[in-house]
Length: 396
Image (cartoon, rainbow, N blue to C red; front, side, top):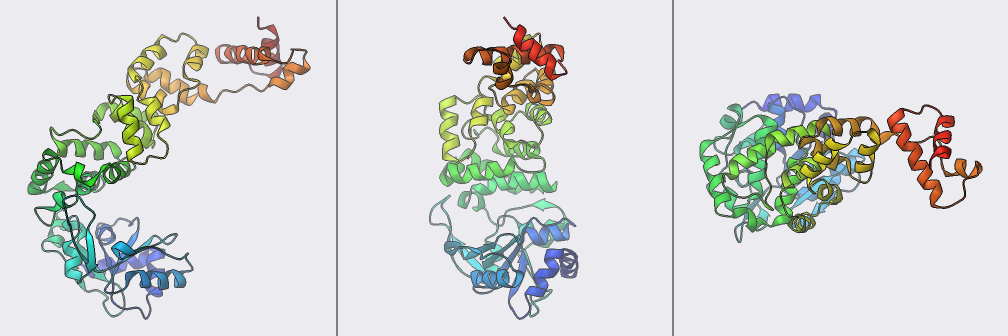
């Protein structure tokens, strides 16, 4: 374990240097968890997670003042606070217990050793002192430095996934993001937890939140494939199917879009079941998922049958980009790519006012003629306003 390397790499970060300066006169502070892991791996941490030996939210408030950041968002139940805009999370060193499997933990102030023991994986259970009075000191769960050096993910105790089933999804996320090997016993415990129905004890909202985070990983398909491997024969609520090839085809057509991946995994789920699940996991934008998951194979066949660009436009004009991409992944790749990259952005330069000025009576006829002109623009490549207007006026 190299605490000096952690401190050196922390100083190399602009926010890390500012943090160290802001800690002047504040004692008992340690950088912890994923931040330590990433710094030792030579990665830039997403957030800087700190543990204070006492009164984490009070420390967060003082750091926010010194850094010129907004007041922290405090989560009193867990003794934590987030300084938004500074990428900083501060927690009181704590111990926790689980009243029932899958329940949120009951938290109390604790020692650093207890804080390390409550973490999800050993690679995230290392703390390095960063305040002047603790600088360079190390607290770690047993075996944590060795597991991190070996790039291995291992739970800290046998009941880890029973206590908190959301760790099952985090295990898949970290394995994909970091390229770490999953410890053999940890994989066994994960499969046993899935087989026993442990995810249901955490509830759909919490498990769904973790799944949505997995969809935003740098390689979400790898994360979902790892999750499917861990689940074994157990179903992934609400009946998601992880077809890695299908997912990769979909994400190739609509890169960086988590909704098309979710729809690809859910396309075999009944619409009412999927709608209820999306509501339970509090997905803000469920419409594109429901639209894309609605018979993508049938849409793909219709897209392949389209003989002209205007026919493809008519077919997809009221469908979401996710629907086109997923249908493309189901066998209409060429048509989906043409729609997404070319046709969906085509617009007329003329509008209803131009037709009214040319003598077309107000009413549905205006819209019909504009649509006819757009069809000719799509099929024939009308290049000027004059050509568009002539096409609209010539429409029967």
